[in-house]
Amino acid sequence: MNTPPKALVWQYWQTMNIDQPEAACDFLSKKIDWNGFEPLRKLGTAEAVVESYWRPLMTAMPDLTRRTYHFLGSSFEGGDWVAGTGDFIGTFANDLVLDGYKIPANGQSVHVRFGEFCKVEADKIVEIRIIIDLPDLCRQAGISLLPLHFGRDIWIPGPLAGNAVLLTDQDPAESAKSLGLVEAMIFGGLNSYDGKDQASQGLERYWHADMVWHGPVGIGSSYGMDEFKRNAQGPIVHAFPDRRGVGHKARIAEGHLIASTGWPSLGGTHLNDFMDWKATGEYIGWNIMDFWTRDGNKLRENWVLIDLIGAAKESKVDLLAKLPRE
Image (tube, rainbow, N blue to C red; front, side, top):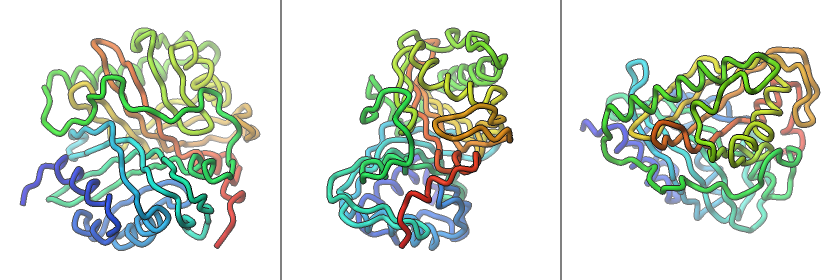
């Protein structure tokens, strides 16, 4: 059939907007490397993805729809990857049960951020990396897994320019420029932190002064470099002073869009308290997804998904213990 990877994933995402979870099997390899969020960390077959992930989600929100505002595709280390982020929106009509943990329905409309990377081979999705902001859904259902935000608590918007769903091919030169900027920012900026002064990273070389950063619930949004350093990055580098960007599973760019994910994507030693998680003195790894837009020669916006339930587990904190069991 030779369906282009982006077209295949886009069709998969649109098809799953209806209450037919079995339709996922038309797009997924029978044996798939599905990597998710706590408490769904790993699934190995298309049938398991349907029964453990899609069916519970669609049962909980029968009118579920996906609002994608960032979508791109490219290759990484010889593999074809498609990535995107946005919101799942629907009426939380029935309890959501994942691996025996229950989030009680509130009967109201809810929005849940998602980030997803799909690897495509021979017209099938053979690997998925996905994070949904489960703590935010819990919060909307009246259960607080995390303390108040460091930053702003808002419904995360899409790109300012509204131009981040790329369904057609882009200029390869622009894609290379975007990828080079992010790689320089990560490996030459973020990873150059001296453990004491955030200025050691020289982030102003890579970011617009009026940059926007949107993190998961518990961290929140930041507007401008000062807020970003104070509310988003500051608490993390204080808690994990030797943290570094580590091995990426996928790092892609197309046009002015860039996306990366790692399993983990950040590693460091938990030397100081973070939120209300006490320092353990042990090395941790966080599963993270980043989505960026480039404006000219600098980065303008960044959407970040973190499996904070999994991150807490790395620091010996069981956030899921706050949920009822079925």
